[in-house]
Figure (cartoon, one colour):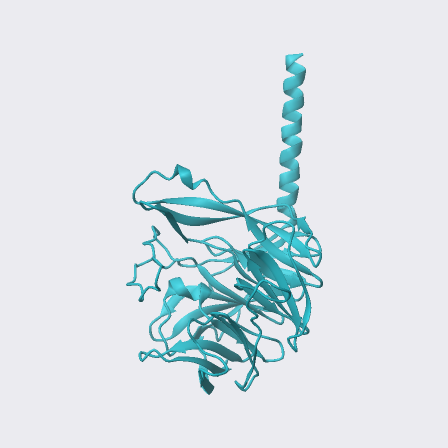
Length: 375
């Protein structure tokens, strides 16, 4: 009897492992070489400033601008304190989409937003709420998901791709110098009624936690970074090594993984900038920078901002096609200094042959600047 039971358990384990292996085979894994196909790779692109805009302290202000996005029609959006600002392609102020409050169409804070051809989707995580307006800023709907959905990643049709995580057990932190804990993220689709469709699989990231006398503070070592692609994919990275995943919305799974041989960049602690009131930065225990710092998609191309920063040439950006083939790379020279640890969240976007970013002068004046890129 025991022998039969043991054989049944072994059979079940083998069957389960075969299922796992079949799932792994379903993912196409592309191993690219260190150098791209383009013989002109490694060039420094030229930037020509088209306009530079500062706030007027009347219609809008720049205080702590973040999360800058360029829409398909060339309009520019920028998140700031109690503001979601919209400008046209020539830098003319259009409107502030932020409506403060807890009523219909109102939010207290925007964690992330997305812009489509017809809509602007705003999301706040606490309290959990979506606000969707049309491109003329008229309210279409707002709703509350039935469960916590802290990260808005992408929009696909009438559903929103979200990321959720289980918070690690910080009560187990005992070391005075802090500890690195794994934070596992799951993906889910939220519809306009607030229903959440769970998607199988999880994507681990690493956070560094440190216990203080009266609190626990944390900062991320790796996080989910990515962009929607061709209206049915989400291209993202969540590890420290050079590994890009393509999530297929129709198949509800990762269908492609691509990599390239990459020389990792050693992490050298930099003196942090002036900290905001109430904020404290941690000294992160790491040997290398994350290989992939930012992902921006354009048409059938995927732009990957790497951790390679040449003082004279700028940031190295890799270019892949929709099949994960390493086509090209180039250096993007910037007039301002951006730390590698800041690039993932730095307000910067590329749309076709234009670069939009926030620049801050030594005097403290903040500008929204548009450059023409000559590839």
